[in-house]
Length: 446
Image 1 (spheres, rainbow, N blue to C red):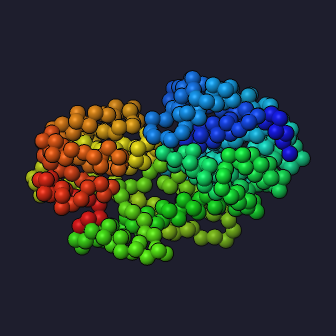
Image 2 (cartoon, rainbow, N blue to C red; image 1 turned 120 degrees about the vertical axis):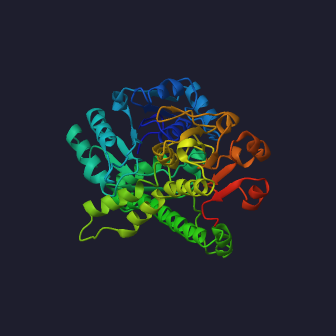
Image 3 (cartoon, rainbow, N blue to C red; image 1 turned 90 degrees about the vertical axis):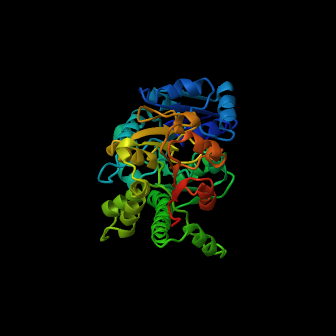
């Protein structure tokens, strides 16, 4: 087992998983952590930001600012763009992005590049842990061969390899790492034990060890697919209720009154790094590494339903515009909420991107508003709410930021040219909006 006198850890990938995990590990006595971040035009600024003791995230992350400031000040945590820093690491964590392409196959360029870099510098006795979400079978069939070939080392004898995923979400990064049960799978028992020892210093809940890396990879992708499928059901039922003039939220309330029921909530679409991607990774892994298995049907269907919700949101706008003799090309629409999740700055796979694209295709003037996001794909996002809604014909709410629940709606109405509100997140109460004089439509409210 690794000596506690001085444990050196390298974390590849300074994102929503890598940064909080690295900072928590650096706060452990005698743990010294170095993050590795490629210095690119898009993300290289993170290196300087973190090394100055500041968090790169604009959203609300309780405890993270103070933690980063403390571990950097104590010289326990720093970030570099030099992968050779991992040459003396006892543990190496891989936290790079693993997106999917247009046909929903995993893009492993970053994962493979980092694995090759690690294989070039890793020392004997190191434990490598993949935390990036991957298709079941990836750790053993993609990462392991690269490490073996590049290093010339023998697994078990010379190094250990495990897969252990995070369950983080923006706004609760530290809380979820510390207080969510941890799942670990390894290529052998020694790998599992080493990973369990490491995480035991920062995880307060139980640590579940799986029979293999594949079992742990399946646990991650099935967990997120379960949520995506349930959201898809809620979204489809919202459309059913909407078509029949019934409020879906009244239905959900009576269903969930039973202690053993938990119907999910519909909305303007599913975003983030995990849910739009992980079901496809599960499907890919099952098709590539499974035997005698037909293509899973419910995954693709659920993804199609959830991906269509931004389209439906724009259809609601079109329905109202048609009734009021308004044209998209002559209108100004404000998209409210650009991050995919409330009170965060995370725009990965945000439904707002699809809404914006659909509106722009209709030659509509579109203004973007978000209190946490500065830019979306290079386009400036307005942070001043009153500037964003000034002279607008329609406000379409895609994200339920806290700020939106406390709006002075009387003032909002006076600032708008045409008081139309489309609610994609159940922020407002239908009757109250109509009493105030808004033309109001919402997903699932009939």
